[in-house]
Amino acid sequence: SQHSGGKCSPEKSASFFSKVTYSWFSRVIALGYKRPLEREDLFELNESDSSYTVCPIFEKQWRKEVLRTQERQKVKASFHKEADTTKPSLLYALWNTFKSVLIQVALLKVFADILSFTSPLIMKQMIIFCEHSSDFGWNGYGYAMALFVVVFSQTLILQQYQRFNMLTSAKVKTAVNGLIYKKVLLLSNVSRQKFSTGEIINLMSADPQSPLVCSFSNSDGHFSPLARAGSSSVSRAGSPCICYTNKCCSCN
Image 1: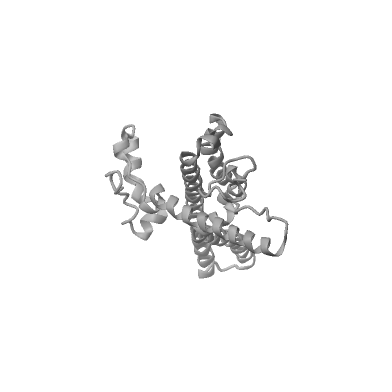
Image 2 (image 1 turned 90 degrees about the vertical axis):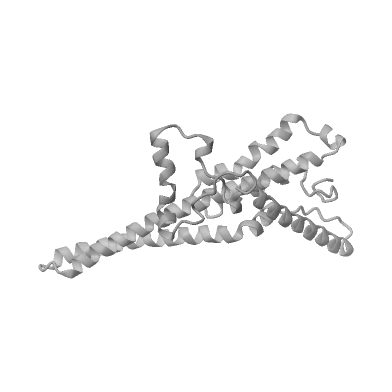
């Protein structure tokens, strides 16, 4: 928002209840019900979700991965005559960039799965209680209340899981796309002749979309935003590398 001068998102100042129920977004939904939304009606991205923040962090981690690979190649070359063909790991760089949110996504999914196993157990106890108890006392109300709390909590956790999963996959796409775009701008004329315009466009549009598509099609994969990113165009043979040094094994 500070880069475009737009309206700040109310999510930053929203309460915990407002965040888990998305009530901070109710005004936009009500406005969209009355009339078609326009650009001025929407909020700017949070600073932590924008490309101004995501791309530099990922670029820093990618440079570390490139340097780590080069150091490992030098060490192996000093002991072995054969050159080491190990390439920098895009998956490892993405993990170092988004590991905190990925762990959070995984924990949310684990908690939701635990609650999904808990609700049938409570239901079983309710059935046993109704079959063997002639006095429907406070135990029945306790089982009913416990079942409501478990199902309600599971719904809230699953919604948060889906949100963070999609948001992380969008960040992965933004990071990879930004790095490829920057590398394309730095390509020399000789390097540009090796790749057609269509191949470069695919690298900048279709391939970074793969982590996002993977996340939507496989929402149960905790690390789905990274699953396809590790095998995307950046590290694929025949594609221009994005190490900026033109000395790593991907450039050779």
